[in-house]
Structure formats: C-alpha cells, structure tokens
Length: 415
Image (cartoon, rainbow, N blue to C red):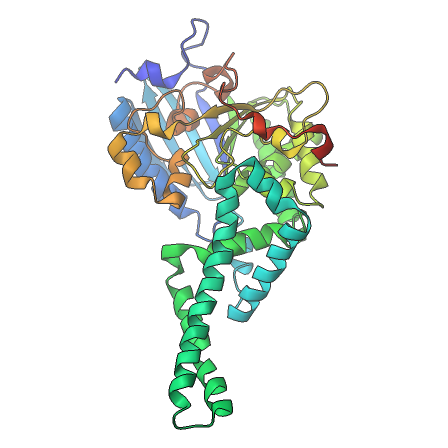
C-alpha cells in the first residue's frame, strides 16, 4: 500500500514534516482498568498498522516523572518523529464508583432510569440516534430480566418447599436463592457488560449532568499538565485525544487550558475526539457547564479539533456534531469540530468487519486499533507520524453524511 496515500490528504501545499517532537495526552472513557492496558493495545495495534501500511514504528518506556506513558518513534517516508504518549488517568474515580452491591445496583437502576425518563432526555436521545439509546436501555432490560429469573427460581423453590412446609413459610424461604443468583450474574458480567453500562450511565446522571467534585479537581490537574506542555520549547504539537466519555472531559479540559491563557503556546494545540457520546451528558438538565465549554471551544482559533465516529459503532453518536447536537452551537463564529467518519465498512475487510460486527465494545475501541485498508484516518500516524493534525486535515470539510437530525430545532435548544 502507498504510505503517502494514508498519511495525509492529497494536497500539494501540505508539508512533508511539521512535527519532530509531539506530546500526546490521552483521556480514556469510563474505564476501571489501569493505564498499562492502553500501552499494550497501542504496542500491538501500531505494530500491525505499520506492517499493513509500510512504515516503521517502535515503542519504549517513558522514564521521567509525570503521568503514566511511553515514547513512540516512527519512520515514515524517511522522516523520523518522536511522540510521548501520556495517559490522563481517572480510573481510580471510576473504580470507586463501581463499588455498589446488588441492592445498591438496583437502586441505582431505578434512580438513573427516573432521571433520564422524567427529564425527557431518553426520548430525545432515541430521536437523535437509536444505537446509543438502545445501549442505555440494555442494562435496564437485562437487570430486570436477571431479577425475574432469580425471582422465578425463588418461586419454584418455594413451591417445592410448600409440600413439606406451610405456604407462608415456604415461599419466603425460597427467596434465599435470589442473592446468590444475582451475584452469579454479576460474576459473568465481563461477557455481557450489564453492570458496567449501568454504572457508566449512573455516574453520568448522578449529578444530573454536572461532574462530581473529585472529577472536577482531576480535570484541573489535566489542564495544568497540558498547559505546561504547550510552553515546552522543543515540542511542535500537543495533541489531546479523548475517547468515548473522555471526549466531553477533553472538551472541559481544553476550555480551561485556553481560558487560562496557556494557548497559543510554543507548540500547536490539537484535539482528536473519538467515538463520542456527548449528548448522554450534555442533554441532562444541569450540564450547563459542559454546554458552555462546547460552545466556547467550538469558536477558538487556538486549536484544531477533529471529531471521528463511525456508523458501525453503536455506542457513539456517529456523524453527529457534538456541539450542534447538544444545542451548544453559537449563533456565529463556529469553527469546530470537523466531523468525519472512520468508515469501518470501507477501512476494514469484510471478514474483519463480520468478526467484530456483534462485538459492540470491540468496535467502540476500533478507533484505537489497526485498519486493514486505512483511509485518511490512521490513529498511529496521527499520534506518532510527521504531520500535525491541522496539516493532515488542512482544508478538510466535515463529511457530507453528517446527520441533519443531529441539529436541534430552535425550540429544542438547551440553556
């Protein structure tokens, strides 16, 4: 495959190299796993992508202080680039939010469902894109189904005991099987992601759209790290990458960076948002701060913002502008984001796509993985290649297939 065709859009005025040293800050989504998981994912998938596309890439540990990360060196068309990848970790906050027992889980289910239903948010989310709405309903249906199975087993046991005990003693005694059955379902949640999805939505809805105080404090720390990197004299680009829930966190962090006057700095600032589900939070009634950050960031000339989704990803609001779909677009002066598709059905072979088509969480992470036939989106050339994000996508327009349904009607605009 011709590497030049995958490393940049076809335009004569694009420089061959605009980045020799880059700092990447990756913000994960709602993920309890330690950051080394992302190091191994990057190592394996970048090796595959380099082999497919014909460039060289190697990885080594990062030895200095600061957030967990690694260093990547790429060689593309004879050009060498070094990128330091840092994980802006909040998995400890996620783990703390996942400590609910069985009873607390069902209370969370009732509370979260009530918030999304009573505010009308769930119906608006379904109207925007059905896929993420179905994902939101999935834990509700599955958890109620698991409870029904457990209660059915309890009734069966009570019926059996009623032959030797009075009915008023037999049926209550049958309830002893409910907790172990529900615990058993939870132990195999790694196959179904029922509890995980519920806890993700519950975390978002807990404060009706506001971030909890501990997360707000962490975002301030992230903003300071990014602001400091922008002032380093030997960096050409500071690239912030947000995936899934990490997208709306990245929006709030970058709004703080620019508001504090850290940008423009010595390095160019760019934001790559992947597989966003921003409306899941921005539609909630007390998400005014997020909507204001979206509005503010969409007008700023200090950065370049590219948003990438794919219709095959049922966990994201594919080809929905995260600013406009949140009703946060300003009346004038909107610059960002540029919205494009990762086009899974075209950039993966039919065999690969069929392999992952029903593995919804794997497809949601495809943005961070190798593609069989990458088009203009190549995660590893963006994060480790010789061109800045603004140069790779200079003069690029949003995809023509950006959904018009993602633009709220005037009467639906949020405050």
